Length: 270
Length: 305
Image (tube, rainbow over all chains, first blue to last red; front, side, top):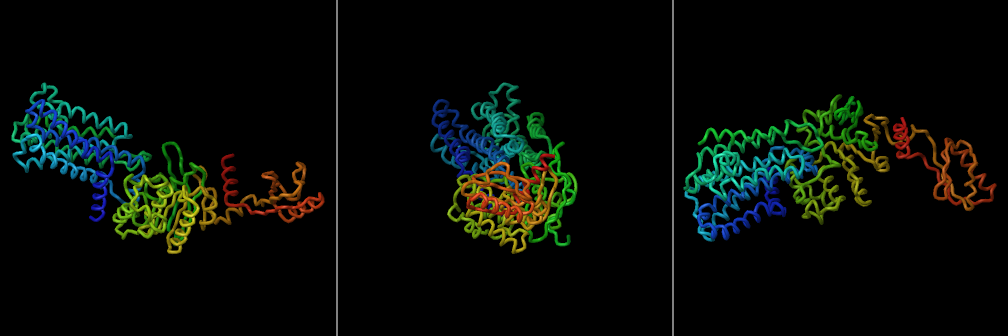
């Protein structure tokens, strides 16, 4: 437990001390929040209704998909994991602790957004705080798991960026943050449901913000929860200590199994 | 073999078709410093990594303090200390954090005295990527010994270190040895291996071609002693000179250098010749073959085959 606490405290400090992580955990989400609040809320007043869920989801994407994978790849390439291995640090700690500290950073950023948005932009607060917290944690878990999985299977930083952007960019366009899910064409809606951002926005709208959900909000929570657990399990299975060690415990394409809950959700939850 | 801390039997490791280590056997006793020498690609790091449990062998057996590193690596973690050649720490981790962090995982009290001793006391709060290569290596060493391991693996420990740090490292190694720690030292530095090792093993193309004390290894070579002579008028520079028992001659930096199988007749004849030429002797050095000479002899012979 003492070792876990030292590890957790170090990773949490790294999230603020490392300039790139500070940018992705705090500066980028909060800067984007202020810009969207001041600009979008003026241009499109109904956007005020979505500021809190949309910017919380955006912060989650930034702190997980953009911030988690690259440090994992760099640590593996620079022999950090080898140091960890010879000192008996379990792979589960290496993968879970950065995800947990990121979730803590996300809670802080979400609290800042939620506390200031009503004052700055007349944004409505969540109507069900318990559900808001539960969806936030579930969404963070799903995105962190996905990000850890990307870090584990990516052979280099360049590939990491590619994988992360494949999820991040469509999430921005189709995830319900800028454009409501109900306004998407049918086929685009199906594709959007493969993204954690869409599921998170749907769950936040339906369970926390008192708005109509595009499809089953509890189904979205279920999809996020199962995909998060599955992503962590796959990451632990596919984890390799160093790039020179050619023995892997599974082909990287197995990571695509993480899509199963999203695909199943399209059929199971209408 | 009773008190062997490390036992290697017919150990073999391949990467695809490439045979990195080809059936080597050796033992290291408790409290011994064993030097593992060899040119690049000889199989030193592979051997160390298999002993440390980082890789699994393809054949033979390995035992470190009675534990099979491949199948029981977790049991080894608190018993061995490792300074890897290719390992790092997170960029933003400070030496103080690293000491607390790794000692917490080994469940021991942090050894800040080691950081001070290795000259890192003024860098306790500097981030890892701000440390020089030498400082990073010293930190790696401090972390490797902080939990008082029974066996210490050092892979090129003095690479990037200045002279004072080398001396500190060697003192620390001697202290650990006196406390019963077994040390495996993989190095390219022959002077270090000769000075520090109780025994050495020379690896060449995955095979162990020679083992023994540094003295035993140097004694089993061609046995030629180097006689270096410098005179006032360079009378020895004539190309057709022949002296008894000399099998090889070369000239370097105003010195005439003879490789002799029997130095008595050689030195007597050289001095007699200088006197006969009315020349004056400025410097005469007689050197037994070093471990480096023997290493080069073995590795060149091996490569020539």
